[in-house]
Image (cartoon, rainbow, N blue to C red; front, side):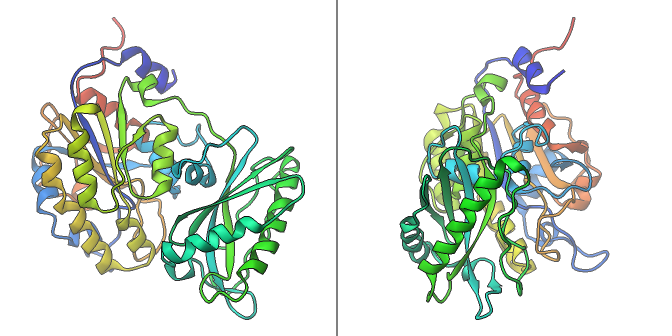
Length: 401
């Protein structure tokens, strides 16, 4: 039986509150065998205190050995099988900034990059160019004109922007142009099937004109295109779980994913402290809150162990404000692991903590990868995290006679 068919039948309404507090890329690795991970190195008194009264485990975002993108990673946390619901990064970014995709649109997540004199990528993120510098450049790219195609270009944040192509005969099955390494030129957009050939040709022309418009820029003189995708359709949290859900996120992509599963995007917080204020202000209005913290992932991707430790401590320090609201269920986890020693997303299971009045506690005394390996939740697929949350919130009825 489909998981959501089951939750539709069993979900129960009550006044319980569930908080899912997500540190993006939370999982890590030690710098040397037998050492401590970033999470284990960090001073996390609040997480450690919760570990003693909750239950720990390790979630597998997609399947063992598969390194997930942020989209599949979050879909799993939300209880949507990422192998069943394939959502491209472009659609997430576009939806995240409030762009209303139409049927037949192709959305693309674009990154500004820095090209050297030979046309090779010297910085894949254009030095993480600040938004105030990148946004006018994205707007400038609206001057690209392609016959028979409407081209929409929207700034997002830092080096990221969104391109949406609208026209007849477009399909989103096109390979990324980001080679994922420096010292080589961007790739050409290649279609993965015949139906997407027109989209690849249009994207190639967009890149050609865009690079002309960016010529002379010191940081953002090039671009890469990723996550070509059409408009997705997912059942909502209200449909499958009976929950009125809110998302409190800073980055547009995560707002987009939350919006696609029917969450309301609340507040305009830009810092973790402001996110906690939004949570407090909206506590009475929702059953479920998704709170997203990005910087454990970005520091991991930068390969900066010490910075990821510091960001983990920042994440921990905000917990008392959540605890003060006395949620019936509190889940702390990540969407995937981003070990700084790999400087990329990885396949490693993700530390997970669940605290509820009726959870079966284990003997774990702190929150870290090693303790989570012996925790009472064991290793489990992330798509079952929501059923665990619902059960502990007494929001699932009995299955069968």
